[in-house]
Length: 126
Image (cartoon, rainbow, N blue to C red; front, side, top):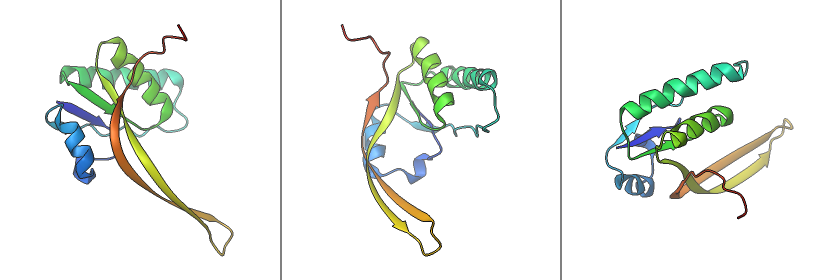
């Protein structure tokens, strides 16, 4: 099983991303939680722990995690320390930025999935 813990449900993935995920088995969406800016570090840690527990109950072969940075960091750290394989999506981004008549900027990005990259702990420069 491959758990997709992002804001991007499997149904909208490209064929390339679906194929790369297939090596892990069935893909199960686990929507990424909304993380309000006013949440404390302790609240985020608690929520990450709850998510890790739900994920680990499913015993996945891998977990894709992407979203708000502090929650991602804590969730990935917890999952790795519990021996769960966690991956990140690697994409090529094509961006077009336009200045509008009202002075605002509009940015459009297209993401072209290329592969998954495994998370690992930093081991220094040895």
